[in-house]
Image (cartoon, rainbow over all chains, first blue to last red; front, side, top):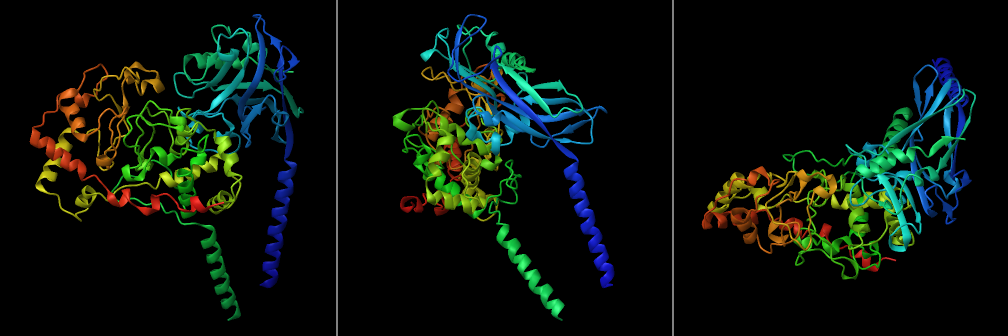
Length: 234
Length: 342
């Protein structure tokens, strides 16, 4: 009886460690590198840039959420990634490198993610980590995440201290601002460099008329469409 | 025999371990009430979490200049609202645009503030905390301040088994206090539970209430989680159109959250802009002051007719909603430890 128990215990331990070993082998790192630029030039805080509309621009804050990463697989299924909400700060290097776990034995053809935070999370109360309201990306007066903040100054803005403030958010119909993006990848690829060209956004706004948005609605909805255009592969 | 003793001791040790780890959820409510909307399983209310929230609620360091606490506009004796001010005021004497709402039975609300702009109890505190005319602080700075105070490190450790202070934990702690501010021991409640009797006048007041008011101020919470336009003309010094600011839908013009009437005797002044000082004025508004508009609540389109005696009976009934056990419950009062803490 004792021997039998010993054999069963050994078998369990063997299975457990085999599974552990197998699970470790079954994953590889997939790195997403985010490169914030202005017309291809590295984006720097409080550095002067000129938009295609002739506006002189300086940036103080560029932050946005990338969420719900998943890999589209060659067999037309998808693999969701557990690490799903990342707050990217264009001026904080540590946020510009995101490591995802990729299943080693599966062929991938696309990486997908969202720009912004899912609506259900905007209705889930106080959340931790990158979604903690302490990060200043949550509206206090009207619940919901701010998906993207672009703030700075430009002499073209007829505002106090020439400030422009784009806070793009809102999750309710008819003006949800969450946008999804997808980029093709090779099966052997383990790194994706994502260029975020802020000029694409700034070239489409007339700062003299359109310099502040801090509420959800039709305007934010339109600007979310513009924001998506900033993202491309290197 | 030895085996049995070992198992017994092991069992006891395991049970004590579980007992130490799992803290009791102290949130309770009357069995005959509806199920709460707030999920007290996800954020279980423990004694330690409640005491942390209580300290935060009464601590003026949550405001930019350390002068205004949540309790400044939400006093216990007046049902956790601001009395004697039509519009609540914040730091540096700045005046807001609305009358502060009473904090009671919050677990049964699906939205907060007069316009319902806040969709979850846990994030409600962010609004007054960051409003320029209220506490004018940032959550980040609150975390920074609390992080330097050993008293709070201890409280956070007890509440979350971790002394790390985060924005989320500040909000969850505050919620564990505010979600406990439940009132269900008024004379009305005791009458419903057959623990007390109503006078003839109170009974008639209840009958009139059911006929004229209960469609919006629905028992047992005396609110219905809806937004209604109750026929108040716009105060042109404020131009507050209520819910429309949030939904941007003209159909929501002049609609405000239906507030609870519990402890209404002590929550004056009344209405979103605190325009009425007395309950008599409120009753007069509903019987002869309604201003018709496109968004007026259906319930008010037909005039409410009450004789002078009926108005008195209704008023007498409203006073039965006063719960002195709640208003003077020492568990909800200022924690003296805040004065001596380091």
